[in-house]
Image (cartoon, rainbow, N blue to C red; front, side, top):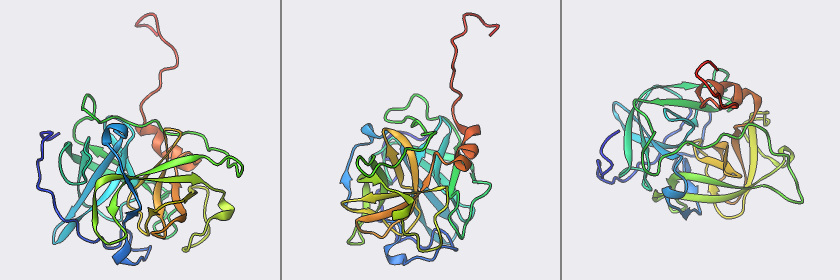
Length: 265
């Protein structure tokens, strides 16, 4: 990790082009989280910003989430980039700790046209262990039943652009509730078991799948795929879906069930 000080100047973030060539979006509005409340990384130490660089183009940014001391989960990547991860910072482009990466892996059954299993794992060169305001999140392993009478409250966390096309450099939060699949509108085809629909009441994610993190009951529940840049029902990759759980399993910390009294256990 680099020095925890401001190792880069704060920058003006360029407007994103398509994150995925298969999902065509209005580029002027892509990648924003609108109507956010600014929050502190101290309360959400698992959220990271991801810088994606390639020769000849300005960098773009995803949000992501720490799931182990070496691994970050984000939206699927459409091609190879020079990737760096910033953890422990309120800002998208300065402070905290920066890490080079050893590579990424999209879900084996990712659907770049359908957004099925639309997630990717990034492995850092180093460890998140022992750093201030840096900590893995617990991953939700079972689906939360939908209740119209008592919907589950969730939070979407990350960075992007605001409704006035200005870069959001501070970590932001939007409130969501989980909804049923029947209420979901997905313009590129039918929803699939690896998708979760959620409703925002103020603001929300925008058209682009830039890795904004959905947290329900303090556990990781989703990674953003699509939203209308306005309050309403938006689509996330569903982390407890069986296909995504199988993909994540090799990267998650091993849970010890028994305490062994000796080294022979």
